[in-house]
Amino acid sequence: MSKYLLNKFLYTVDRDPELVERYRTAPANTVDWWEDEMAGKLLNCIDAERTTWLSFTEDERDALRRHDHVALFEMGAHPFLTLTLFIALFERDHGPLEYQRAYADRMQHIRMPYPDITT
Image (cartoon, rainbow, N blue to C red; front, side):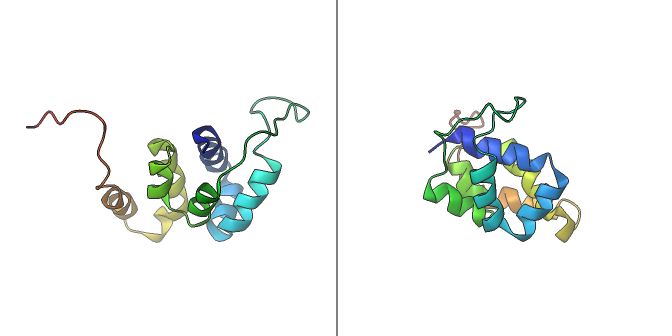
């Protein structure tokens, strides 16, 4: 598993409106294309600077293809990156803050590693 690669996918897709729409309408195709074409690119470097050692696991690919932000978070994806990308993907289909609330509801079972200071 590569938290770096998951976060890089979320980060790079979220910053390109055309890629957001592509991921929204054809997630499996977009994940495959991104892994083949973009995963090896080093951000802010010339195209000749590439790496070949990173790839998604099948679980990561599956979660990305299904837009499963909870599974991505449980795999170590950064919550801010998943939230901002998934808002860009789906907020238009919901009322004000409706998607954000549904997102939070699906994450309620996850407990932070910090002590509960309310008890």
